[in-house]
Structure formats: structure tokens, C-alpha cells
Length: 472
Image (cartoon, rainbow, N blue to C red; front, top):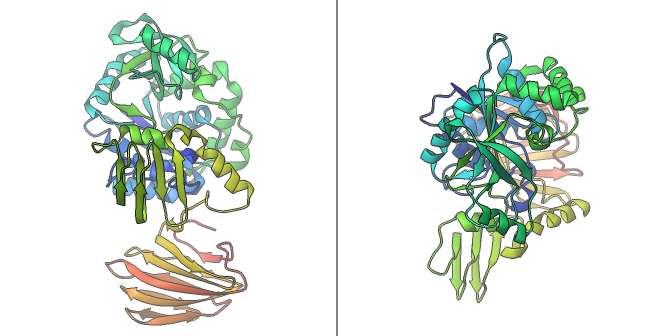
């Protein structure tokens, strides 16, 4: 039995403006029209003898993760919440400690550690690689998966294979950082180097023993943070104060580069980490001119260009090797050779005190979604969708009043001491300071327009009295 551990942290800033801090790339449909990157990772496990996946994600992404796991058939998926990012070595330690709870001292469950934002085109080859690695992991090896390189890539780290082991693996000779072009070409020509995929298979107890040997400071903090964890719905919340003291380090630096038990199994399965827009262009289907278009696009004399139009018509004339990404609130135009610097745009947005790096105009909540369609100095207009059976928190605002106009479905409204239904083409008014709530008692989506007016319209002007999703 394999126990999948899916790391769903990170912000994917190089895929801005589609990837945002509160809705990063692992939750986006980048390579598939139906499934997000996380959901594709989960689906990749179908047919394997494995337990339900254990997720590790940021506190801010908990409802996105839970909802996407529910859509994938895991209604009660266990999710460990990190109050702050501390890189992969602590995250995997939390998962290993969680797996070992209530197990005998002799048990060493096999952890298959996967990133939620990687693409693998050949699932059969992926699963064959996992089966190939299992005997090595059962023998106490910490197995990493090296990708057979298709070209001299400078954006990935590499693993140099050492002597061959039984069961088609190799000892790890060394890990190397991202090389320059000439060095990468030498690695490719030698045939001894594989791309470092960041995927692993090893025993939970074996990993913790190696972490204790090489980074006991990380293990001590993770153990203390998990010992004082709380359970909330499907979530395990580690102690925030304790975990904040954890050193930040990757599994490569903390363990894999120091252990004597590292092994590597090669994998040729159409892998990519989709680390940039050019990487997405490379793995996408293209037309005869080398273009990859999504959405409403009209192109004339355009070559080797990626266009994603989510909301409006995008037209291109006489361009080549560009990336054009259109969202409701931002537009990116970049040369494919320069897309690694998109993160510098995100840094500039942050330093300017703007908000476009945080979230889209359309914001997902555990009860549904809202879209801020217009705003001014003292007003804001939102389109709100509430899922069947869902309810917003019982709340109050100090600085704004709200008008609700139902477009479709039925709203159950609590307005002070009164509770009543509002149906299609009807409206209601919530005064400033009034305790209120909104619920969808029906079986179809509730769609309404909300007009806010007042002196302050920020999302932090909410006093919650009751919330079924554990928000305060």
C-alpha cells in the first residue's frame, strides 16, 4: 500500500496573471479544460493500490483544496494546513508524522510525495516507475525520480546517476543546481544526468530518521507543532506559534544531498513542472504555425505564440514568440524568452501597494463565488453565486449597507429579527450595522447582484457571529 502525499503549497508567481497568491497554479485548469493541476495529480493515482491522498497546503487555500478534492470523489480528504510556508523538508515531515500516528513501532508506511502542480502526460509510464521504485523504498532507500531529459534545460536541477542498484535504480552520485547552457549540454551528452523532478518514494519512518540525523532542529519543531495541532472539519491545523519557529529548508538540501541512502529511478513520462508560460506553450497542442490559443482569439500572421483569452476577444497581427494572457483585471504581454521575469512584475505590483497579485476579480469562497463587477469611491457592485445548501456567515458590517437583487434561484435571508425568502426579480435591503445572513435553500445555484454603499467597503469590515466553515 502506497500513501500519496500531495504538496499543494506555493504561489506560482511566474504564471501571473492567471496564478494569484490566493488562487495559485495548482488549483487552476492549465492543461485540461475540466480538471485543475491538483485534480490531475489525484487522478494520476487511479488504478494504483494506494490510500486516500493526504494534502499539505497553505491555510489560505484550505477551501479551494477541500472543494477540488470533493469534486475528485474525496469528500473527507485529510488536509494538513501550514500556517506559513517553510519549504518541503518540514512539510514532508508533518505528513510523515501524521502517517505514523497510531501505528506500531515496526511499521514504515511508504510515502509517495508528489507536487500538485506538475504535468505528466503518460500515466502508465508514471505508475510503472512507481512500481519499479517500491522494492528500493522497502529496502530503506530514499528514492527520488529523475526525468529522462529531452533537451539541455537550464531551468531544472539535475541528478547524476551513480552505480546501478537492483530493481532498475541507481545510487545518487550528486545533485547539481540549475546549470548554464553549456553545462546543460554536457550533462545531456554524458547520459548520466536526469532532471530533478521533486517527486519521492520512501518510508515515513525512514525519512524521519534521516531528518533526525541531518536536521534535528526541523524535526523537533514539526513534532511539537503537530503534537499541539487541532482538528477542524477535514483539516489538521498545526500550532501556528510553534511552526513559525521552524527553519526553512528543502528536502534536497536537508536530507537528499546528505544521506547515504539516496537512490534514483528514471522516469520518461512526459513530465513538466509548468514553471513558466513558455513551459506551458511547449507542452500544449499547437496549430501549423506553432500557436497555442485558448478562448476568443483571432490571429493574423502570428507564429509560435501562446494566447489565453478568458473574457474578451484578443486579436494578434504580425507577432511571433509572444505570450499574451488576458484576465478580467490584468493583461500580460511578454516574449517567450523573457517569461522567467514575470515574477518581477508581481514584485512591482506588491511594492506599489496594488492587489492584482493577491486574487482575481472573481473570488472563490467555501459557499460559492463572487465577482466585483464595478466599484467607485463609495459603492461596489458584486455578482454573487451561492451553491445549493450553502450559507454565508451570520455577520454585520460597521460601514456599509447592502442591496440584494435575486437574478435566479431563491435566497433565504436573515435580516435582524426577520427571516424570509427572496425569489427571482425580488430584492431586499440590509442597513448598516444590521446582523444578517444569506442562504441558498434550493437545489440550483442562487445568483444575485449585491450593491454595497458606504464609507468603507473593504472585505475586513465583517464581524462574524456564526460560520459553518470555521472562519472568524
